[in-house]
Image (cartoon, rainbow, N blue to C red; front, top):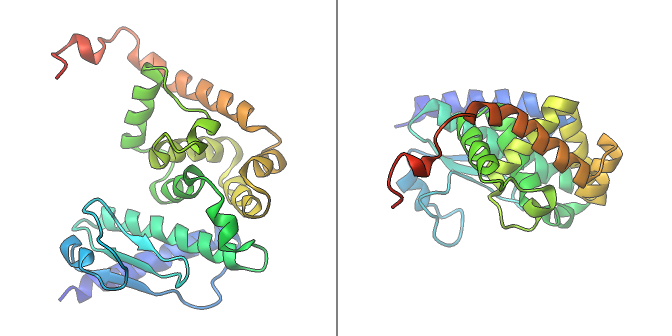
Length: 233
């Protein structure tokens, strides 16, 4: 009954594939399945995955079968974002399993801010209101993480990872994002940064923080802190 929407999603998927194939300079050796459900309750009942799926799970890309499983979200914009995000993962898995990769083990050694951050950046774009909100709050509280902080797993990898890769893509170009990922599969993310960007993780953390401060601190100058304009519950 969702046949028309599925055809539209198929066109979205082909568009994403062409973008990512050019960026990663990589083609799939064979088509990858995309399993679509009409809505999230149907998706949560899928038998393609084991275990219970949470309400907050937008979609899944399987590493071994390399297939995307996701629901239609009810909004073409949201569906397009989730689809793009999961197809980045499909490219990441496929690159890891290719002759130039180091297998799934090489991918599993990368921190989530690298994997999920790249998927968010390439599917959302450089500017995103939700990520901007996280950055404003973090810089206001002097709580913006360094790259080492992100790798510790104590910080949400999606939003901060998205912000970091948006900075890298904006400063060095999106091709460098793809280059870093490919090399990180073989040698790790810190050596990959040094080889591709010619900078260390610490230096990149400092430069990123300075860019965030320059962007958001002027916007907050002279404004009330949230706690001054209402009761803290």
